[in-house]
Image 1 (cartoon, rainbow, N blue to C red):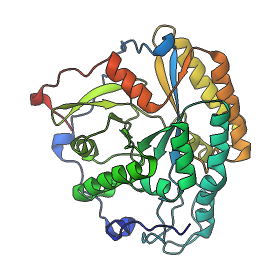
Image 2 (cartoon, helix red, strand yellow):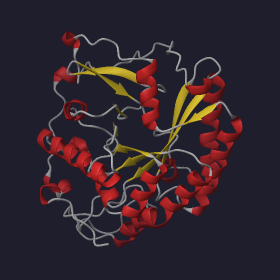
Image 3 (spheres, one colour):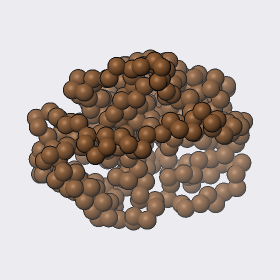
Length: 334
């Protein structure tokens, strides 16, 4: 299929968008260092589960920075090289092919594992990536995996102006609705949001939650422009990005995930939490690494008392079990 270029107004993002100014003083004290203060609410996961386990497939291939999409460079992040060899401004054909491996091979290996075991999954899906691989998108829809929007493209939202970011959010929602048959209910930026992202999501409407936070092991409510908004935190620890940063074998990855699960499973006897496992087709989708993921999936299944679920399921459960507190417009944030 001939690649579909992003709309011209969205091309060349890396080269054309200036970094926004530093945070204004008004944002200096909106951080929360207290959270649940050591006394989290009882999650009350379905079936009395000790832990909610959510596998997340980051589907980004085809939406990364590329010469072909007018960005002026090829993307090299989260590939098999520690630093790009090809000069900026030239196509890095090696990096491009590593991304292609993710959708041509890695995705289907991961998909088979979860299909064979009848397990749900959440897709952090970039809209353009899904558009460019209808076969994969159809498979996801048929399995009823939920899609948490990972942007129109795999770019840094903190580099966008507010007008550009608002446009990107609207484009992404419309695209995923066309491709998948339903709109995304969650949102997750590449690494970090901008200061405006959460407010723009609330203004767009239709989102149950966002996952642009790494600060807890349970969902929590915040308020944005006077409205309650749910955060379902994510993790970069139990994540296959570690495979490019010090972890080299499937056994290492399995041990990392198993130890995290076992600690949370034990704690879940009195204080159930959630665990997010982040995956990338171009990383864990390789045979040597898949062995570790398979072992972990089977470890979770054998342990019992684990609710393996989609991210939207966690959000809906939290909304029903722990409804949003009343928001005082005088203390609105975001």
